[in-house]
Image 1 (cartoon, rainbow, N blue to C red):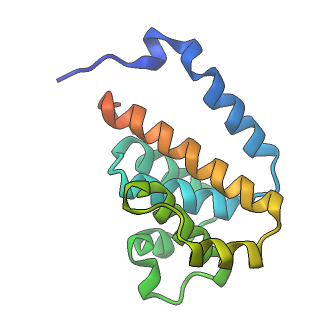
Image 2: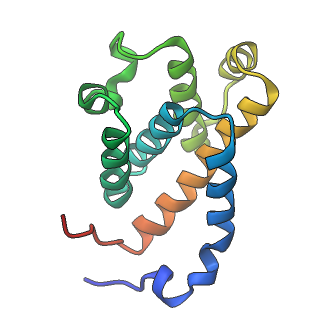
Length: 146
């Protein structure tokens, strides 16, 4: 069943999200961290449109297919660095905010590894992908033709 597509009906509603995306494009946040955040949050939120988009972008930017395939079991592998593991833990805790949000342990680990600016950029990236996921899931955003 087709649903209303907000980008077609209310394109100006996306301007704020695009402003955050433009900010993140210029931020210190690494491309790898951005990809991991976008893919992992989209997996948790079961957003097919965003998983499709962001896995393709990550592979195009040189991300390993194996790491993408194993991303939903990241804590069971040694494929991810300590920094990536912190970013992924933050992504999971913030995306699952109804389960308590960012824990004190994860917060302390993150601020010991990242400066205040980088830490803030991680949270902004997690927040914006969660917003995109909610739009795409709610409207059943169709996958593009390959």
